[in-house]
Length: 254
Image (cartoon, rainbow, N blue to C red):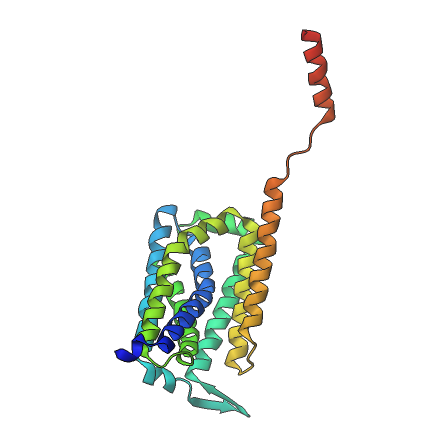
């Protein structure tokens, strides 16, 4: 326990917390987009359930580190390519994320299909199952990264709890913001599509530095936020003819 109170442990805790928050952003976006298909009265419950399940899954994986590390050992090979349990999870998770993002983008562009689906009541259980599936994928990626940054399981658990608590607090705000701005939703779906491709590449041992990807994501989001700000600040054009007629009417009345 004394080792947890050292400066090195504190640095590891802060680094892990920041990393978990950054890696959790895509999780929040996915949950926010999925829960928008539910009636408004069920959206908050679905978001909270999905995020709390993510916490349970990540803590469970941390306590099963031996089993988790064993998931990285080769199960079979195709030619010179070796595949582990982790690779298969990332592969199927990436394919599922690409499918969901592509479907959502298609329905957003088509419009009619989305309206037709919104009429049908989406089962809360179906949404929760989809959230859990992606929680498992994101949790594997997050925890395996955390193992390289800290040696103590308790530091990892504390960082995960802090990150999940922040995610829980921001989930509704992010969800409402995405729902109010269609361009942000399209941008978020594009991010999820990109992350799905990254997971597939990772499954085939083609690593892409995630720092570059997240930097591009935040830059794109920053530019879109500036566009939203500009659109809000623009005043509607003034009709000179209407203004002239108003001035003439005022002169006549005087």
